[in-house]
Length: 64
Image (tube, rainbow, N blue to C red; front, top):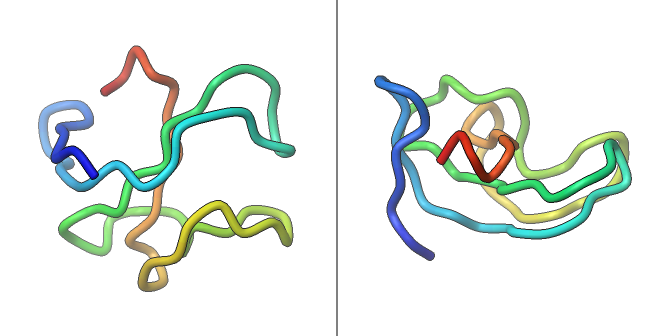
């Protein structure tokens, strides 16, 4: 639930932290303020969190 920045121009709320099925290692799922994301919290048929379409993004922890 923490408000974070991703890079210089993306901001949002952390909705997921952990391992995923789409790639190994830790990931952070973020619901962005604007529709500049890539998903709605679901990737390859697996729901990690829920948000509006194109408001969700997954990044590595070191990018937050």
